[in-house]
Amino acid sequence: MNHSQHRNSVLKSCAAVVLVLVLSFPAGCGNDDFQRPIQQFQSASAVVISAARQSLQQMNDVEEKSELDRQIFEAEAFDESKIKAKDVISADELNARVNALDQLTRYTSALADLAALKAPAQVTQKFQDVGSGFKTLSQDAAKLAGASGGVFDNPRFSGAVQVAAAGIGAIVRAIEERKARREIEKEIRDHDADVNTLIKLIGDELEIAYQRRKQAESEEGVFLTNSLKLEIAKPKRGDPVLRMLLGDRLREWRNRQPLLANADPKPGVDAMQKAHQALVAYLTADRSPKNLSELLAAAQSFADRVQPLGQAIAALIGNS
Image 1 (cartoon, rainbow, N blue to C red):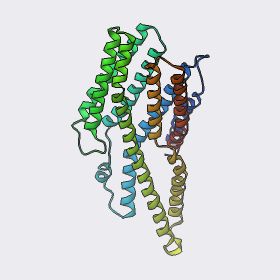
Image 2 (cartoon, rainbow, N blue to C red; image 1 turned 135 degrees about the vertical axis):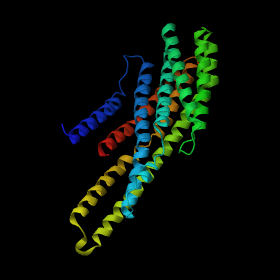
Image 3 (spheres, rainbow, N blue to C red; image 1 turned 30 degrees about the horizontal axis):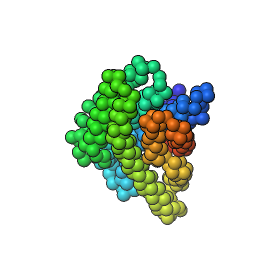
């Protein structure tokens, strides 16, 4: 299998994974109305995490590509150091953000088990796993706090992780000590603002990544259009081979723009936050029918919101 065939196979596999997740949203779990929104939340969260990783990974790619195009257009000598200098996120920064989303999803899943009145031992183990996950995340985020000069505010991110981890740690201890349900629910309510602060911060950072992608795409469009115009203005309308190459790239660029419009992860993270809040409200308000209805609506809204996101990310992978 040659490189092109291998690449196409990988892209098709990636797209298939995302589409399977998207198509799984409507599926329920028997007639249990509570399980359906939780399954939707978990499936939709998987799409958000995939989109977040893809968006952050592309930050360096699009910045480097933009710098290379600039060098070509301005007839500069090729300079690899200038291209690498455009990198805006490290592997550790990227992994910490994606891991934070993953741990937040696992925490919400643990809350769902608590709300569903599952076996105490199962609930305790799940919360302990979440507590351990946040402890590791806190250690990793702390290492980033001293980093400087990047696009993201690592000290702020690290601080938000530490606060959320401490709050979740308090909840885990309350569950381990088998405190009364009301006491556990109070711990959840008291620390939920800390969890939501972290979710919002990650969403804001992903919006930064998306806007930089849009800016880089805009600059590439200008580069391609101007390059094609300059070539056509030459005697005999320039080199036909070069015109075709520029034309192909311009067509690919145009095809990406509608996909890019749906590839912003921030609204998906916002919907994730609302679904999480609806679950907390249901869990801490005597599981009232009104709160269940709001949870159902929030989970469905989350699933609906990420469906175009998942499709756009899969298509952009295929067009990259």
